[in-house]
Length: 286
Image 1 (tube, rainbow, N blue to C red):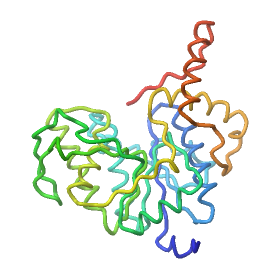
Image 2: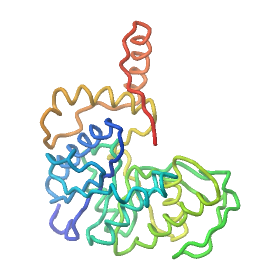
Image 3: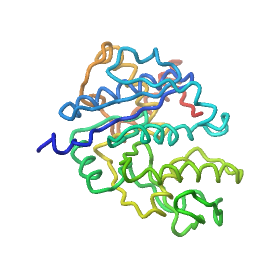
Image 4: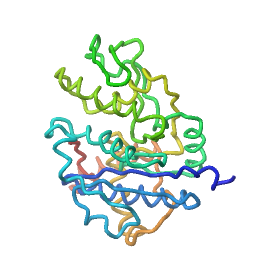
């Protein structure tokens, strides 16, 4: 494989971490360690957008302080997940590299970069996985005027949702999509609707109306977004921190992650709780 030719445009990976949830820092460190391990041939640029820059001074990343931007990006705290597409847009407007945003609760597996670059070079947007049709039935009939796509109407028969735990875009092609996604979020918020996953539905719907091809990265991209999976991984990450994670270094995805192991952990956690030992981390969202 000619990695030099494949990465002639460059790859910028973007993390967003803010607020008071300590678990996100540990998640980010594990994700980054696997990213740099599998991505070592590719000369990666990695940036962390955060309101606490000192947290990441020991990591091989660029750090951007967004403490002053959070009120604007979140619409004064109305919807914090709006920060994600705003940060992605900010990086795309200043960076000609392919831009890849990853959530903190993620990790990378062998073969990810080959699959990602093939998708980006084809003009597609890469995402985590496909969820399904009609992700927000309460929006049936909602209309909006998007700045690039124009008139939009939520159609339950056509609406689709992809998981945005990973979003990989080409600034030369996809700036209109991301700008429209932010406008879509605002239209939904102004409509009075609320749902945690509005931002990923926004991206999915704007990809659809712009007729952009979509490539899914699962299973070479790992994303533990379900509550039980988060609790299992937090338990494992605390153990990883005490051993392999003591000093940051690139390393493969050493934490075993399967549905069977998550089920086993749920049983183990319940038994431990009856014995007066709490092994779970309570997971909350913003």
